[in-house]
Length: 357
Image 1 (cartoon, rainbow, N blue to C red):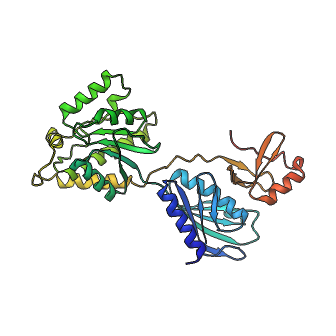
Image 2: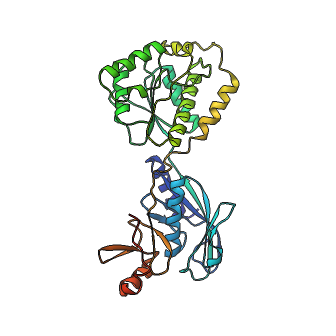
Image 3: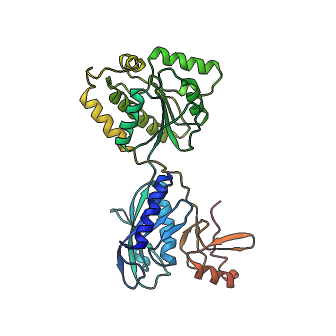
């Protein structure tokens, strides 16, 4: 592996640790004449920055646009950049072909792979169930972190689950509600959970009815890992409902059995109690795991413009070459088109396009 490849992969690990979404672009095939070779790689960041090398400036411009589109959709794709306008479009195999009039004759196929941060889950408490939430969440691919009694939740926190058995519950729940966290759960018996919600309501805490308590779906869970699994299953179900109804977070009634939640109120849960129904638990694992890579899908808004010189569609970003004229910005695939436009703007204004408003 070359030094450049090692540096790029180290940068990818750094972005992953920072929970920054990005697209890994890898050249899988190159037809001469082209400056790229199979194995060349680049990272496309949410602001349109391209780090690495997958070809010249015109190819990079296409990779920036299609990379941002892939980041917005969360779906991997194969990008083919070719000078042949007759081959442009998408096929039924997931390959997107873009005609690039700036190319000197070669073509490249580039695999665009979105790397999205896993859902971020904050857990409050040191009980067996709190520990199980961390362990089960790790298996499912979630980023599970413990929080204190006076938390400040990150903007992309997907869920907050309180499993402290009566310790500082209201403070953490109120903080989660104020932060607009999509799923807020309290592990408690029906009686105590209702009492906590009533206290928050009486204190005028907006959104107290959104709290899921007893937290988790009714899977017949008994042990801490089973209860943790039921919570993640409910989290996924709630997130799916929010995705279908973008009006905002709403409380979905929790239906986990009272026996399991009464067990949650105990300091310890016996290890030899009856296991949850195998089929229901297996379905919950499949369901919860299916959403673990969704992360920041939709967090990137792709704004596009048309290069008034060559006619290519380009992404509007700080990294995209642009020229101001008549109080309007015009964006280009590369510096060559930008310089051509700057030398004689009137020639291209009839076909030019500013960025979308």
